[in-house]
Image (cartoon, rainbow, N blue to C red; front, top):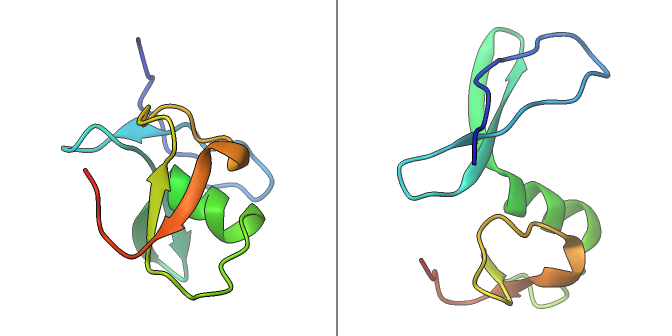
Length: 81
């Protein structure tokens, strides 16, 4: 699997994910000159997966870190890697 490395800085553009040291897909976001990197799964879960118990971690139901579809993600109490 080839993932091109390119950071886009314009609003409305699609971000290309990169692999972090743990094998997770991540994107880097910028606000006011400050850059932060977030896992794609975490951003997807925040946007589309309810978290009524306010659990802190996101788990891939099928164990596939590349399957970041909302229906494959769930909030968890325990960090799983």
